[in-house]
Length: 431
Ligand code: SF4
Ligand code: SF4
Image (cartoon, rainbow, N blue to C red; front, side, top):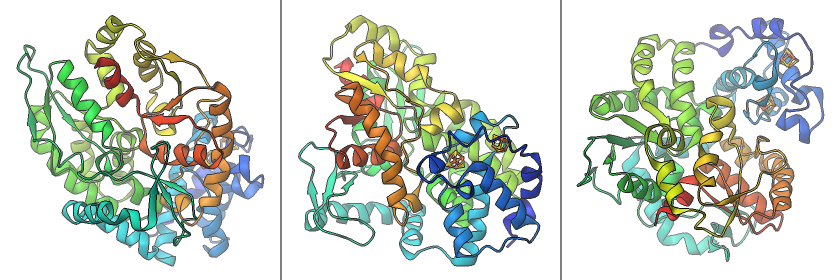
């Protein structure tokens, strides 16, 4: 297999960096570890040295490159739009080749490739969860009863559903009053499928209120984001190929495929094409491009293509909750989506802005949530403080990775604000 530096010209990126330092104050890892090597400029410099053979990919370099949160803050402000997150993703493939992928990540990515086995594993997890986990009194998830491998006592983990979203509904849900014959597919994402099933329930309710036919594609697999951020390129390739073949089998028959998850949506709309170009899978690029106009984040599509906003407005401010909206990196910075969920929520809820809604929550991917959790925890502290300051009862974001991270950060810092996906809140306002 080719090394990332044979595919990707890290030196060119390094040469294009004008060393202006604009990226440094906004960098999530630099904010909590103020060292030049853990900054976008530092990462780029090191990658240039790696390409030239002046830097060995040793354990120290691995540690440095794995400390990036892939938040894209740096790309947003860079005058040359240097894609630091992307070059880090590529070098992680070399790291995975050289050092291997930890057994628990390999197991996890295997499950993401095999839906049936994942279904059984999650069922077993649901049945035996009380052995190691207790319900959080605020119903935000599950608390570790004692220290587990990589998970400390009292850490808040995602809840587990008895039945996954995909196994809870028929494949077709037809509206009796669908005069316009609109038909929409749902791509649910793994966390919303197994852990936060209220999101899918809410989306089905909203589409029913709008008299839209729903197609729930049962053979959808993970979008590949967790494997991509960890450098497991073979899992990413497998998942893109399988999903793409499947999506093509129904895409002509639907008006859109909507995704209530920023990371999955960004992965499919943005990263699939880049990954294929970087990994000699160019033959897939036109097929992906053909499909893209129909793929949307859920709030964005509902806002732009339906009467939802009007319908919500007709209910007035009917819910007594103060909501603050957090911008997932993969929604605002990667897809430019931030107004749509706010506009929909503002019809029925009182809204308050936190001091920096665009600051990364610190989720950072599988490695950050396991081996490097101390960094995720540090990055979560300022975010939970600014949420507390708003006095909001609910923090909302269209991203379940943000939910995992923010719920734990709020729990760890003693803040009682609850997290809800905007889709859940909108569905509640409609009932
Ligand atoms: S992606 Fe985020 S954490 Fe990584 S270098 Fe850029 S700003 Fe820093
Ligand atoms: S903002 Fe861009 S050009 Fe400036 S130092 Fe950062 S990566 Fe280099």
